[in-house]
Length: 326
Image (cartoon, rainbow, N blue to C red):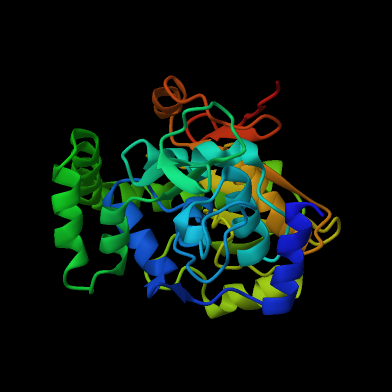
């Protein structure tokens, strides 16, 4: 029987995962990732959570006796753990691993290991081996499990021990200082996207929620709107800047207003489509909006990350929208 069938059966037997593993919640994981300027996309958070799983037996058939997922998990194992065991859906697309393995591997937060002769050894000596695996670096595991008043100090020491980590921590500090200036422009662009772009280019769509406020990201009024539209956002779902719904066609539309980052990329499309399918929606469309052509060029020059079959709108050139085709 395929691994995903075994994991689906395990999920059915055990039910949802606990809120914490080794005493670590996903909120703590998000805080640590943000402090490293890695963002907190749901897949990366859930991948770290999977590698804290000391309750589930290893899915390697020849793993050392008593081994758990936390002792070493392959990309396929992690895809099943995130998608099936944690979320109750299908396994993650392995092609998305650059989003949920690579960011922490590059700075040493995930250790590359291989199952060989019944034990885990360091590195991936054989490319694309089914026995290649990952585990949390001990320092990261200690940071995640540290008391509230200690984890930032441990993280600072861990970051300073490596140049790449140090750069990440510095970038996070600078981003925090700049955020106050960016936020106002970001809120203005979200409002323009909803009040100028949507009426012109998305007739028939009504706003379910706008993510431009401090505190709770979704108000009680917006929750009521989403409930009436049959939309339920779970913790693992992507949170777009604006979510709209067409009552007649039962389609959703996502708008991402970009002043620093956050375009509609392939990962975001996949994540929102999973949510839309779970909610039984007929489909979902996407638009990335920018304030000016200059800002769009400054982002897309180096990144070129906007997904195919989505749209772009420029606030400074509001009479047109552009479709990205491959």
